[in-house]
Each structure stands twice: as C-alpha cells, then as structure tokens.
Length: 117
Image (cartoon, rainbow, N blue to C red):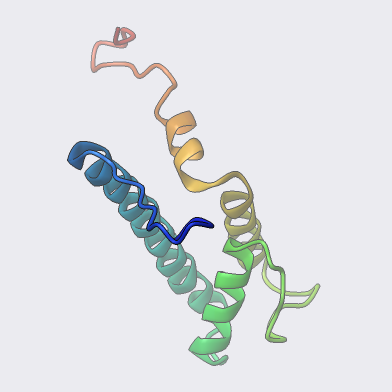
C-alpha cells in the first residue's frame, strides 16, 4: 500500500499480536468448519435419497445466514431437519464463539452437587 507520495506504508505488528490474531482467526475458522460438517452429517440422516452436495449447500447456506436452498427443504420436512437448520441459522447469526462462551459461563456442579467457584 502506498501513500500519495509513493512511499510504501506497512502495518507492522509485534510478533505476539500477529500470532494472537492468527490463532483467533484459525480458531474461528476451525469452529465454523466443524459446525458445518456436523450439521451436514446430521442433515444427511434426514435426507437419505438426496445428493450430499445439495445437503452441504443448504447447511452452508443456513450457517452463513444466506438462506438459499437447493430445493431439498420444504415445509413438510422432518422436524429434526427443521431443528438442525434452525440451530445452524441461529449459530450463524449469533456467531459460534459467543454461544460457546454463553454455554460454558453457567455454574457447573461437582459430583457432590455443590457449585464450583
């Protein structure tokens, strides 16, 4: 990137910041891919005769909140498939990391029934 005088401008981050950003981006991407693959396999259970690429397209569309369809979804599909698609849309809309933080923020009980501090 150059400024109006032709000088090259670069953003130089310390090594720790660069690796922190790379780790955060890779974590988010990996969680997104895992969620997509899990949703894809779960949807394949409810659409056994359909093309796996069509199911992948619908799962990716739901997770990305694009809401396009390949034609395999309709109003009379199985309730389980509807729940999976709704969960993928919800995860895609609210993002995966905040939902994981919410899920792990509730107090957990140990084996004696007491709350952990």
